[in-house]
Image (cartoon, each protein chain N blue to C red):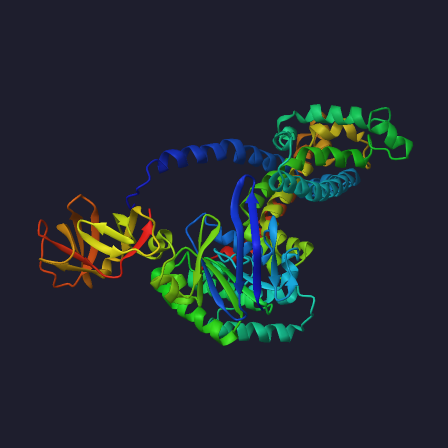
Length: 339
Length: 273
């Protein structure tokens, strides 16, 4: 099922959570809504589900205008951030709930067969008689997914699906969710504030800030060509140096960088900590090492430019220099954004 | 004994045990002792006399009716207070406790005045042929009035703690509002409801002050058990009074035991393991 949002607006009291967002999600696509808290991503997800109604704009499921369809008739599967499993029902009863209340009547044996099938799909065979309080967080997450899938949703929506789990469990569940998505081919939209999760899992990432879409693209596109300083910062560690632009050239301490389409005047130069080479002499921005921090697979070096701007970069574990060493920072893949 | 981190066990346990002994066990022991001073035959004759059994019937049936009324009305009241925001909500919330704070005799007199055949409520009701004061209906109203807070105050905190996402989950799975109420909300309220019901029922069984003014107190018809025990006391027939009271005591204990069992069953899903 293809989903289309057309200039959707949502205001809570006086706070505008979503400013005219338009978005197309292709059938079978796995899309991440990525943004910091307060960026409106969960509100957008809840409007697609029908748990909130937009104040303006429209939401289409396929060719049908779904804007005013009630959540229970919308045919979406929703996985809540804290799972929202019914605590007084067993795992099996939770999964069967949607089929029991459905208008399309199924026989008891049909339901239990489907519950068993879904339990196999989410790899929880044998837990069907446990109560939610008796299983782990990762297992609850999978029960919530099985329950959402039980009603054959046209669209699967997940709100911070792995937010409350340990790092290891998260990674396993991500890979597993991707596998399930590839098997079932169901259009999936999920919300996260964790860029690693979005890049790891999604076909396409939609980056939001203050209720607006700031960039949409494949993980490769958004990583290689961040559309703004916000995206650059949000996707990972980034260094920022104040530079001056004239004639599409950015300059700092006699080093120049290409700055296409940037107006003359002050601007900001961004680069990743991994895109730096330390040189003892010659080419680069002059700097002094302030501190070296050791990590299992690298050394993180903190340096200061002559005018006191700080730079962090990653060096090989064999990096021999100590604090107070003077040298030059040679930058690869620099990006200049308007200040 | 192993060393404990928390101090004060012997002091607080000592105070608790002393309190329980003096305030709870001693009077109940005296009651049973008095009742036991009758022989088994006399005891049975007194507690199974026609007037006594009629009073049990009146008390229990009226208490049941009052509790059922409170089940519906009390739950609706708790629901409204928790779920909706409207002017006067806090006032209504505070008003719920009024029956606790009001001397029951005052409530009884007020209810009698209102429901007497020339009262504000009694006159129009009498016009359509419903008589409240001096009938079992009056007893039910007095019982319901004094025991309403039990249901509201036990259900309210559980309703407040219910995760709204559970209802949203029910909606996304296609359930109707009624199905969500019956299958998602009600089962989770059940333990609190049971506790509220048993407290409300127990209070109704034991209510005295509010009832005697409105009930008319006709033996066999509108005489409650507590009043009968009181009448025997007034007649200086202490053993008979104690015997009748002991029946109420046994009824109260049995009911609390049953409620606890039901509650444990309703809460079995919270057991880890």
